[in-house]
Image 1 (tube, rainbow, N blue to C red):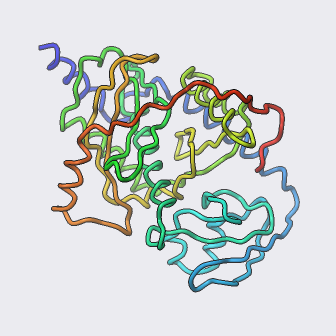
Image 2: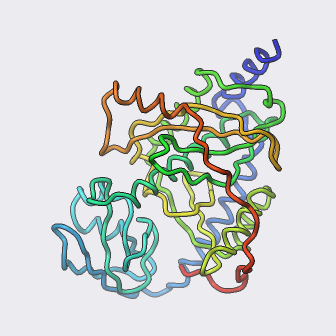
Length: 333
């Protein structure tokens, strides 16, 4: 009987955003404001239009030289000087051999390679896609519940593509501790994710100092601990943020350029991981394929069945590294 009551409660909670303003609305507004302020500050570091040279590498563009704007032009800007194919198929870039988000401004003369899902070695692209699918799932979770229910996104779980599912660890409100997800609930979350995909939202990167990231997540002790750990482990002592719509998140690596690169996307399971430092830890899992790599429905069913099984990946160790992150230097971009 109690289980039935919780299921009824969840169906009411997974109502449309118009039905109630979530408690986290003020938090999202704060995160956006801090993100926009820092983004504007970094852009102001390049007050004059200065040129840089970008030497393109890759099939069909080898040796092409583009003259772009320092601190403003991005790898996506470079792709727009080529063909529609390069704009639509590019997922990440390599800038002087370093993985680079498509929306991150270029600051020096460099070599540039545009990466796609169909490259000879798509490992980095696949990993970025999996991270992005997890980030999208976290964004859905933060806005799926009504105002009286708390949602705490836990540090991101690094799951290889070979695991069969991407993951998002979360602590839900204690009122939902006895709840197990129904197919209807999973479909509701899937529809919310597909709506974000259809909006073709850019995933904007921003490298920031730990102090800025701590301000962004001032409402979440869990996220603040994650910021401190990431900054301590970063060679430059910085933290990578992304913004998708009105959702700001931490990321341990580059994400893809936009939500519409996802095609088939489905939330497949919710597993209990037991009680942890923040409450009852849950692992929400999903399956997705990008627009360039769609699967027949019979293959998809088999992949989905596999994605329902618990992905047994240890939760991130939140113990701070022994080295401390610098706190007063300027972010690179």
